[in-house]
Image (tube, rainbow, N blue to C red):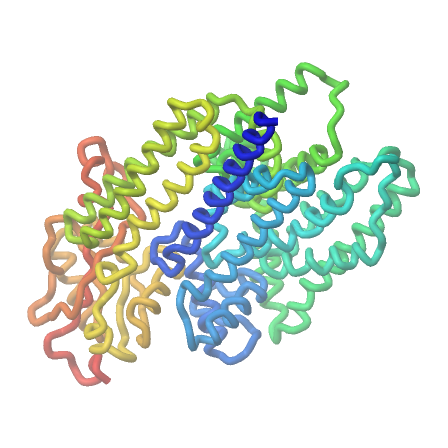
Length: 597
């Protein structure tokens, strides 16, 4: 009796610990949501640009953009979400634009937890599943920025979650044949799938519908032609409803021809062909080959990549031991179908990316939680080692940033506290086998928290222009560096209320001081102001033409590096290759029509 009571208290403490870790993960995701350096991809600013200009037009459609061939790049629901979240430009901030993505991500994490709870009635494992999903790097990268992964993952997988909840509850005492899903349910499935397509692409109906169809048929105790035909018709109905919702874009847009050319042909059909030859790219295409795509789930898992490989090893050993006699439970079969169909479908296009299978990552999180204790400890130790390396590097970057004047002592102290905590988790996980698995997930969040704290000073005064500087220029024509599509859009948040003209800020890096001075002089002659980037760490001021004035300065993180710029000799000194100054420059005596107009 005493042992049972002790066991219950231990279980309760373990569950509370996982609940606390889940709460910490949510805080990590919410922290710095308005930051300039939240992990993302460059296209986020392209979408922001289109959403802002469309909102400024005071019309839902057509979409508006100043970028060539970058207007109908995504369906309108993505941009409408931003327009509503930003109150049609009245409260335009990255935090407002990103908040819906964060909400969608938390809904997916909640769905993962609820699914596991329905499968094994264990709150601890349910919290573990949610934590694992949030610990995936792809979730951290694409699940809170203004991108499409979070909403599409929620809507496209809602039918699969519903299917698991309805068909895979604990079996009743008297075994009964599961009732097939009715036609009305499939109409609801179609509505959910349609919203997912309206965020990303009509092409996603292929993996989503195929997953639903395979899951329904392959979990039946016995198949017959009537059931196959009936299920095919029902899933086809769901697909037709979903495609009908997507097709509303053509009906509502004043220029459907542009939608067809730019989105259907340019954004989708173009991914099925390649000038190098389909099979050459598929088999020998390096990062774009089928072989690399097979590692997509491990790649998306990031710091948990070794744990995912360990899960695959568990599955391979079970298959090798039992072979054809292996009996898969319905819930396991559905999860494997979920993962396999998405991976197979996205090995077919000539353009392959691990990002395309992000919508299947909830299934992987559920599988990992269910088989957590069966994965060998060695795989977790490798992931812990990876976490230790990353958290140590973040600590060094924070220290170097403070050395050059970025951030306060308090901000550095907070970062180092998280770094030390992360390293203690790594050490504890290595020394105590009972802590290894939990410490691995906690160390992942320590890395993410460390990243947020390391970049936090750049979201404050160090990374922004002073209010007085912003007030000095208004409705000015400002030349800004932009080396990637839409990167100039970031200045809408740094120097709002002006017209920005992009120039290639990286091309001049190979030029000498005199060439840079001439280039800056030409820009100053044709613009009210110029944003100029530091070329070398030793450069303390811009190579201004005579008579120019520096209105303000801020620190910027260099995101793209030339070959050889980072090497073993300077790796320990990130201040020489990661941080650089950015100056806002204008003529001392601007001509008529100056920056004050």
